[in-house]
Image (cartoon, rainbow, N blue to C red; front, side):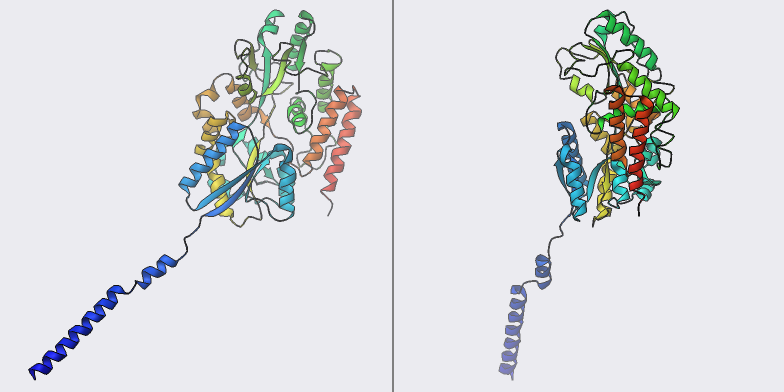
Length: 441
């Protein structure tokens, strides 16, 4: 009996040890299953923008890096495209159904994309999370179509009067006030230009609108002339140019512009490159971004060689605004993630980082307030104009037609010395025809 008991006990111990060994040597199925489960990959967002200067590229690189550190579930794949090719390539991708998730849009062309249904409306997102009270109303108006916001701004733009201090001093002319709220009138600019051209042969008094080139610059630099005399290009509902671009106020502004070239002969139809730097141009209208370019000039410095004053006014102060803003493709499969990126970039922190690197003007009041340089001469001139006196170009899907018509109009009255009234009528007809194309079913 004892032997039998010992035998049974030995068998039980043996099987117990076997079971323990099997348990210890068998892989943990749960752990193995976890190990075999796929790693969750971050959501990748494509982001297209026009290739800017080195500072802009650096700013976006840093913003993307800091965003990804804070949002490990998202990766931004940025693609930069030369300005001359950007619009064509972007519209091509939209047409074939493969647009980027996030796209940079030049604000005047907003309506073209919104009208075509290519942009996601972000009105509710901006109102709930975008701190829109921190933006000037004119900025938001320029980013809205049919009362809805489609783009989020990061930087603004403005222009001012630059003057050659040596030429004004030689002509016995006092320097203009640097006070943003005390601009010269165009009548005063004309008188200064006359004195300068009379005092030194071969000197050009004023370049009132960046000469005559292509692209968007003619509309951006010359449209303020109309605003400063109470005129506008389109009706408030943007359905016609009749009675607006050919109004008496508009004709007055256009005549003053033409007289600079022909009646007063203080502006030139042709100028050699760098005429302002070379001391052959007394006054010119330039953008805030030009200050960075001038810093590279060895013998042409702010305060010693040139100064900056507010943009001249007519009956009113008026300066242009607008710039590249960010929107979401209506075809994006990740709109929530795209909004998170845009919200970050256009936030106080993101915008402050961007403008600190680029030197651009911020769109937010709070960022302007907290950057000391923007509240001191000369950048305070541009900041003040942007926040208090700026206007946006017309928001219409026919804006490319509007922009081209404005360019041709100013060329006709200056280069061609054509009758102001008839030239305005021709521009109105072109614009109205373009507007009608978008009203067709």
